[in-house]
Structures are given as C-alpha cells and as structure tokens.
Length: 243
Image (tube, rainbow, N blue to C red; front, side, top):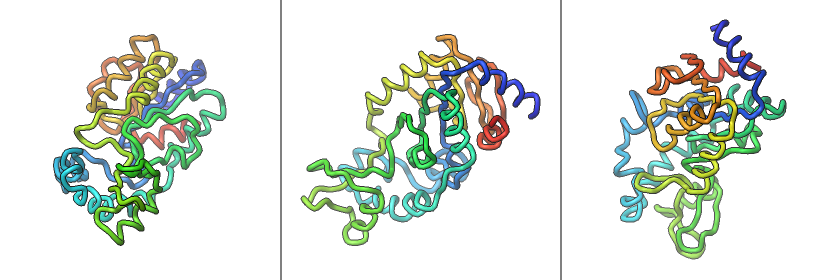
C-alpha cells in the first residue's frame, strides 16, 4: 500500500478543492451495519416492508419497530472513526472542499466536519408529519416507549429524516452535490460500492469536469477503470496514513 499512499499524497498536495464522497463502508468501520451485501440489514429485514415510504404511510409501525430494535441502539453507541477525523484534519488544512455522504448516521458532523451534504437524510433528525416539529433521535426513542408509532404532542405521526424507498433525494442536497462534483479538483470516493444512482454518477461528473478521481473501497467498483488511483483497503486506514 506504500506506493499507493505516496501517489495519493501527491494528488492531495496539488489539490485544494477536494470533495470526499462517503458510503456505507465508511460508517461500517464505526460499527454501523451496511444495508446491502452478505450480512447487510436488508438480508434480515425486507426493505419493501420496513423502509418503503408507501408502507410507512400505510403502517409506520414497521419502520419504527426496525428503528427501535436495530437502528437506534447501533447509531447511539457508534463513534466517528479515524477516517472521519482525518477528513476534519484535511478541512482544517484547507484541502477539503466538501463532504458528500450517502450515510445517514451524522457521524461526519459529530467528528467536526462543517460542510456535509447528506444525500439520504439523517437518522438523528425526526419530524412530525402534521406540524413539522423537529425531534431528536433520543426524543423519538423515548416517545417510542409510550406509543408505536411515536407521535408528536399535536398528535401527528413522527417520520425519520431519512430518504425511504420510493422517495426522491432532497433536491437541494442533490443540486449542491452535483455542483461540488463539477467544481472540485479531486473527487475522493471512500467506502462506496458506487452502485446506487444518482449518487454514483457524481464521480463520473467530477472526472469529466477535469478532477482527479481516487476510489478507496475494500471491493472493486464499476468505476475503477476510469479512476486515476484505486486502493482496495480500509478507508480509515488509508486516510490515517495520508494524514
């Protein structure tokens, strides 16, 4: 890995508009299970039942039981890993332009990143479908002990601030991410399999706009052939070596 790290360092040294694009593999290093693949959450829970917006409208209890039993305990105890803190350090050094993430755990912000575009929302933010009052993840969990699904003081049902299946990505976040991809001089993919669109189109946009494309992922991705550098290794380990 030494030669790859040296090449990565050269790319970083000549860049000052780096966009980091993080996927499920990045959060997996903080103990948060991935959704897809062997052992992923969707191998245990049918997403068409537990994470589909139409099913949520019919009976939100399915999602909230999943949140209570699976998501809340894991995200509550999860801590940012070395990769999260390395990105904060790159930001402090004036290298990192923005973080675009497919993850919904909020760990980039917990670590201290100040400019994070969340394509799929954030589990830590809950809102009322009736009055739009915002609740924290902890508040929603406490209400969940009293009522399934949890309800607002106005009587409205609470909904997670994440994008469920059948919902479009938030347009403002998508537009900002596309703009960042076009304007960066280096696009650094970290722990993403690059199979979920439209998010996976962003490395292509960055590369076509003239940016250096680096992919750090444990497994090969469909875009490896167009990358300037591919490192099949732990993202947090690579970033720690980089710093």
